[in-house]
Image 1 (spheres, rainbow, N blue to C red):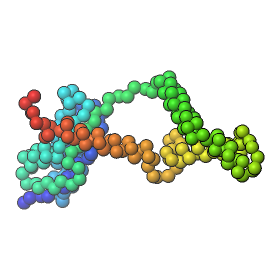
Image 2: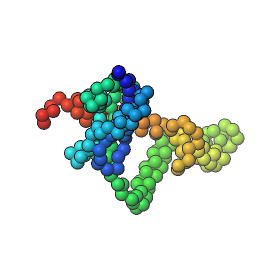
Image 3: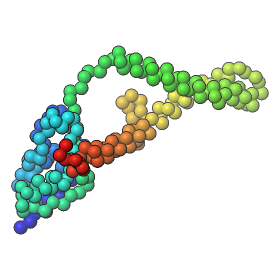
Image 4: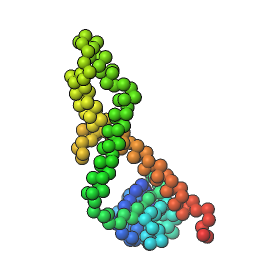
Length: 206
């Protein structure tokens, strides 16, 4: 009797070392036979070696072919992604606070220059002086009652826009930066799935 097995590939997996990849590492498995489930989950699929470097693409076609040969009484129904991307993450070096400080200073100066150049281009000081004159009827070269709230609002608005204060999040919505990083990660995954997938290899003999 044929047993239907539902298979959902995990999109991204991280390993800290090169090791044997079992089905439970790269996919969720479900069937009505609990004993069969355990056997499937512990089925070896791939062995990561130095030749693979730090990225391995496991295609669902190869898994289905491997499992149907090993278990001839199952019918696999694939749900979700068709590939899993395995990244071998080596031990990360401790953070060098000197480098962090230098980068922070460079970014701070660059951001400050950008804001100042923008305000110079749009003649912000003249606008604020004109606004002060329209509201009070008096000329003032430095209308601080406008400039100080404006400066505070600029900083607070930036914090709210990026939705972060260090590790603290103001609400559950992703920030624009997180959305762009997510889009970049999707594009990177699509690239890897196309060019690193052995199923797509047009020159397997090389």
